[in-house]
Amino acid sequence: MSGAAIFPDGFRWGAATAAYQVEGATSADGRAPSVWDTFVRRPGAVLGGDTGDVAVDHYHRFREDVAIMRDLGLTSYRFSVSWTRAQAPGGRGLAFYDRLVDALLDAGIEPWPTLYHWDLPQTLEDAGGWPVRDTAHRFADYAAEVHAVLGDRVRNWLTVNEPWCAAFLGYASGDHAPGRREPAAALHAAHHLMLAHGLAVQAMRAQRPDNLFGAAVNLYAVTPASDAEADVDAARRVDGLQNRFFLDPLLLGRYPGDVLADVERYGFAPPDADLALINQPVDHLGINYYSRHTVSGDPDSAPQAASSPFAEHSPWVGSEHVRFPSTGRPTTGMGWEIDPSGLAEVLVRLHREYPAVDLYITENGAGYQEEPANGTVHDAGRIGYLDGHLRACHDAIGAGVPLRGYFTWSLLDNFEWAWGYSRRFGLVHVDYATLRRAPKDSARWYAEVIRRGGPGE
Ligand code: FCB
Image 1 (cartoon, rainbow, N blue to C red):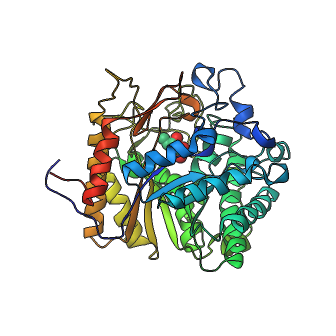
Image 2: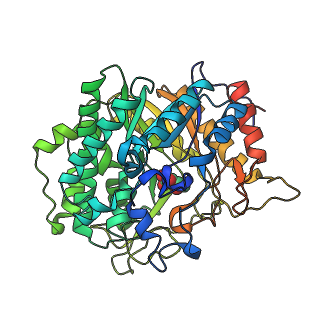
């Protein structure tokens, strides 16, 4: 840490959560099950057999959580809407988001809802899930319903979160719900998630053209492990499936030709007309950044699994033999290498290679196994991680990147998918036995960053 890095006036300072990870109350007010409610009950799917049934009970404790946000000085809060809660009978579930939005606005905090953070209604999965085209249309209908109720008070909207994870962890490696291992279906899932985004933006913009719309993608800096041809090609493939397979359709209206060639054997041939639907003009793009992928290619190696406690199957459809050797950089408690320069690289690349659009970091943070000592969590590792990444954002802004805000993942410790409650990402510690919230050192540090307008000396 060195020197103050002060951000432009109006920069958004936020934190993010997602419905299934924090809300709990999974059967309150007529909420029907999502694929995650089903998946967590599959033996061996989630570490320790943990579920989101209670999570951190944000559904009942949101007023306390909004007060925490206000104390931190957050200007903005990114949360997700649970599809099955929003569609619960009699509007009782949707009323929760109405209350949440009003509580945020009363506290002077701008709401940033994400409409899909992986919790597909189980009924739609039973009808085929994301590999089926109709799911995209159903998503657009749902988006329009939520937007019709909240659009008068909510200006900024995110459609889908991390379509790479939803498609390739959900349908190829099976580490995430619905836990399918069907590579061809995963490609169609990715396509339909992007189609869902496009159709939803169209539907919502027709209702309120003055609102702002975008999606949140998880991007990585990608580097070959060496100059060897196999490594350079492996890095191209990983960058292709992870980054360009989403950015090119969303922002340029076409699929990258090299990735289509990589996945050719799966018969992926989406209708051309869909690309115009996917490529709706967006007002902003959310970037979730955690790490750099260093990639090597060895056609004889066993497939590399995703990062999950149980991962055995590769999400790298079309490039199953890519590997991710360690470079020796320090890692977080997830085993993810810490490399803030990768974030600046991703931002500058977006600015250079894609049409200009306002950018937001919609997730960035560090997960650890940590417990309080004397009532506080001294999370110097997280502070160092956030400080470094904020400085990378500041550098990118200095290089002309239109980065308008930063949401750290996460406000609170929560249900970390296949890792259950074993990894904590929060600025605020949650005691899972009592659900008591207690700010960690990083919460105090972030509040000071916000007060000053950036990290200090
Ligand atoms: C992202 C997810 C988010 C959280 C972080 C750690 O991939 O979008 O829900 O689990 O990782």
